[in-house]
Image 1 (cartoon, rainbow, N blue to C red):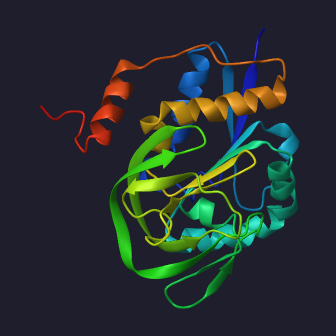
Image 2: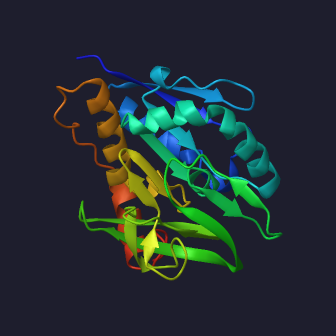
Length: 246
């Protein structure tokens, strides 16, 4: 069966820090390696979002000025993005993109920047940046995730809101409650850079499978695809070492 996926990259020209665009390259590679066509389209300021056209959506993080521009524009896409998410379609949101799916972000000057409020989390500015390697454990899937965090925001999940995973090393959402990121339906939010999916092929394949099963309900599973280097790199990160260490 010929299969294809179309990804929407939101604000690619504005939210592109820390190499998070690498998440799209990983998804495209792992899809193409299995014979699945994978197209990427970009949408930015003053351009409408039509969720019916897309199987996956990615939004990354950026600097404060760019995020302010995006936050204002997102309000014009709020209804369409909310419908997309509520329809159980796949979305990956990293750092600032993750923040803007929630209620609001309070910046360092005390200004409230409204999100689209599709999830109940909110973010406030902290006195200290959280910077360093992170190890997470997702209890539902019994998977470990690794990555790098670099954020000044403190995100607090709403009542009953599910985290992406629990922190084993690092600070996570806020450095207090042991949570990192969030999962709501098929929307995955996280602060992890690195890029997140380059370090965690199991999570990348989960997103691909979820998107494919939404489009092709008869699909039971993905064909296996093992990268020995990626597996070794992740194993070394879990031990607190770089893959190039001797």
